[in-house]
Image (cartoon, rainbow, N blue to C red):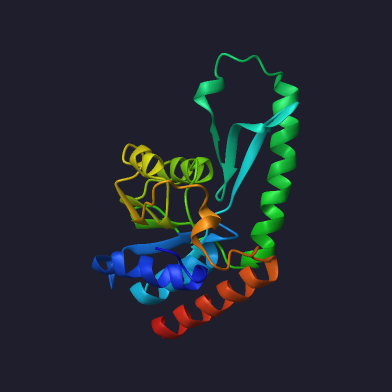
Length: 218
């Protein structure tokens, strides 16, 4: 199965999540930027509030492609246990963390403006992205969300590598991967339109979703 674009992928994913519809404990958290158009469709179908959950990788100094950890919305930091035996100078870690905290704060302001993050504690949290290849970003997000004491975590994506979906069964309470094609190749291989989502598009989608949620609440 191929998706036309992220919006259509969100429609398909939402159908798999219909048991969560009208559940007042549910919140949908999108991983920017590609996860936002998908999550908008999910939140709209489920009649659930939407927010972004921003994760920034902490690259290993000198080998930035390797993640020594991540920081996420709410100031939560998670370190990679696989690198526990590598001696990294504390000053180098602090420098990377400071840089990524600044970028995370910039994106929080850019996407959310003055709106505070949704409370996660005791909520059923549906974490949404446009797909999972290695799943490293989603893993950091799920780990960070868990530290904020949700009632339940659901990892939900339109398309994923089957082995990656299996990994998340030990991390999330529920995993919803709409399609798991083999061979997987890459997330973008399963979209006709997989163009980069701009910051402006993220802001516009979130603003429309928040206005709709305000109308429902009223």
